[in-house]
Length: 435
Picture (cartoon, one colour):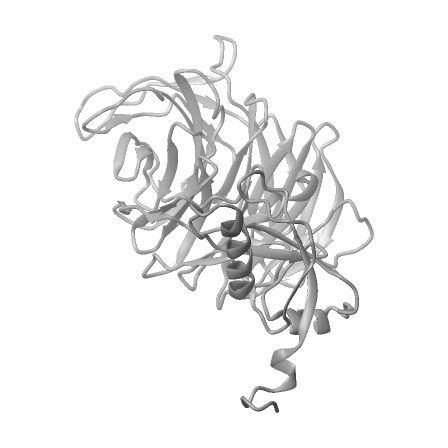
């Protein structure tokens, strides 16, 4: 103890050099300085803000995050160095980046039942699926422009087929009624009251509820995963006269003839799972990934129709997404509170390379940021949506917007997190800047 009652541990100094890839006015002098070893990231943030302010009196402080050897610091410097076995005898290089601080929680978009699916891949709108059997198109929070009407049971999955297309956009929905449906609408339309539209094509062939749908990057096909344990591939084009059949049944409730709807059959099936195929992803033209309740993740060669690799797990899998470093990492969640990340480029192992375990119940959704190699969001039955950075095991932020199970999550416009839940709400938090 010193005369002031401080322990020797708290007065220990570490020689550091701060660096950043941020441009002006975030740069600080490159010379090394001594700082207390007991500083956490909040104290480090104060140091960096003071250094910036010394060269720019008009600077307004903002929070920073800190990386040592490409890992985010989430404890005091001293504890971090001890945990990572890093010597404090040399000058310690600390990289600083802007902290992710969500700016605004928007008003929720209300539905009539559980919000089970969301796709935010188009910057012009986002798409939701609901247990009331309807799909909905939204221009903004609370601004629904189109209602997709036709499924007889809950919608379980949605996919925007051509997110960067012109005025006319095609989307797909999957349902517990064993069908998928394809829809077209004008994405540029702004309406005071939502327009109800019917599908132009119904895809039939599954013998049980359809759990997931994903579009090929070209938009020419979609694939679907079902409780019948199969993955079906479908064409999305409007058929010619020699193609599929036309539905001309009448609506008994009104006595009016409904619009013509084409019916499509699967062009091929991928067989190999033994239980429900909970999620499918189609990130490359010739490659599909799938997750299943049979505890496995499979990579499929579309041309050959065979599984090229399988990752075996010990839990039911509810969701996967492909992204992260090199757009090649697999994030997955299932019947425990843990989000796991695998690298399929390392064959011969089913061991995950990262685990994130702050949820307290089943993980229902995970989604990589489209441009950041480090960030993803996850949703869980615990009602929480969490933002993760793969460089630390702790969540960067916990979105506590839902009052019941969180069922789905996605990014929108690069800086907005969308999530749907069993509380009938689609929640939106904007200003989540990770780049």
